[in-house]
Amino acid sequence: MVWANLMHRGDPVVQTTVAHPFTAEDIVYIGLQPLTKEEVPRMTELGIAYTIQGAELLSNDVIQQWITAHGFTALAVHWDLDVLHPDSFHSLYFNEPGVPRFTGSSHGMYSLEQVTDTLRAIQDMANIVGVTIAKYLPWDAIRLRQSLGQLSIFSE
Image (cartoon, rainbow, N blue to C red):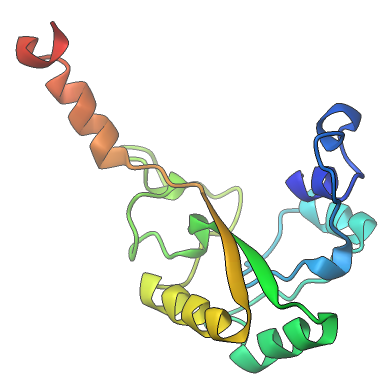
């Protein structure tokens, strides 16, 4: 789990690259879906509090309370795109063409617009100073590149 390394509680070699480790209180999950059986004990071990969310993301009030309680004025956002519903956003791991939908974990439930609205609200609460985006898999772009790669104009 990446958080373990960022909290200096993971791989001893990897965590040495983290100069300022996070604490469990520095973390809030927005859009979290049911965890796998392997994730539950790890989250408990790391002391990360979390709320499984249904059809709605955490409310802006809950997010504002968390920001205020910790005195945060700046935030880094890590956005796993798999919080998005695979029917709403197609460039996700769960949407690999020709492969049955993965059932080993839950998939996202939210639209791009819902997440964008939440991010816009967050930027009004604190300064977003960094954003990372994970799990973007542009299947159509990959397939197009492979197809075009078969044409001499693109391969020579």
